[in-house]
Image (cartoon, rainbow, N blue to C red; front, side, top):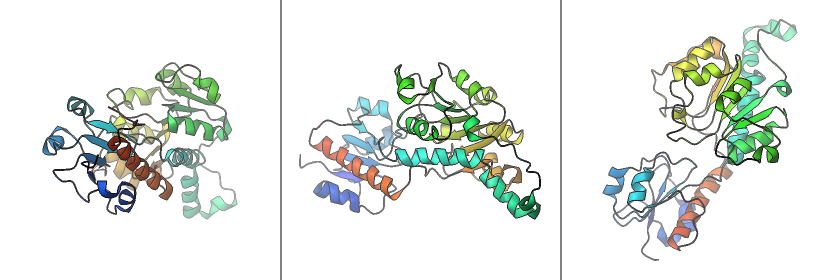
Length: 317
């Protein structure tokens, strides 16, 4: 038991939480004796693991584990676990905030207040806006976060549906929402679409031209999952400029940080027609002081479970 050493691969600079929980098991940097890795963004692939042959377990601070080569870890019998049960309120709160900002035209109205004082005294508002309780929300992926979004949005509208072929029958009754049997059916019937799926071979590139063409005209798209779920950001820009897509809110990008020559990224910064219709956050929907503490603490306790041969709650392989 005393031979295990745990190190953080990236992102974390102050190790006070890790040291407090892990004690003598923690080391300040990776060495040839490191057996357990705490991982944030670092790519953990075959090359990295071959360079660190003593590693026997990997614990991801966050939910997604697409930066870890799971198949190679299986070959090497390396334990992999994640931390999916933190920041659920933060991400679902962010999704609701995006929805409210876009549908209530908060940013667009603020811009009108800046550019023309006549709007203060009754000038016609050139914006399409409906009551939120008349809008329907379609959730793709009814996991922890998708379920939390459904519960919170039900305060605004009862018109909620979901598509998730991996959720057992009956969850629609638990949440009191509609179940769509196909993605196409959800897209066709939803004024707002919230994507809350992990990145996998199945979901990579899911938001493509066909996906966008099947959405209702004038609808809203929210993506708080993973950037590569979008196949081509220029298709989203095209739909925004044609007003077929009324609004897009995203916390993730295919390339993080976005490339300066990225057309959607440049339009977000420069195109006045997209003011209030395009929200871009820097992959921070999970963030709060409480969530960060929860993530780091739970990941550390998972490391202790591994060391002590206890049941590993969120084991991937």
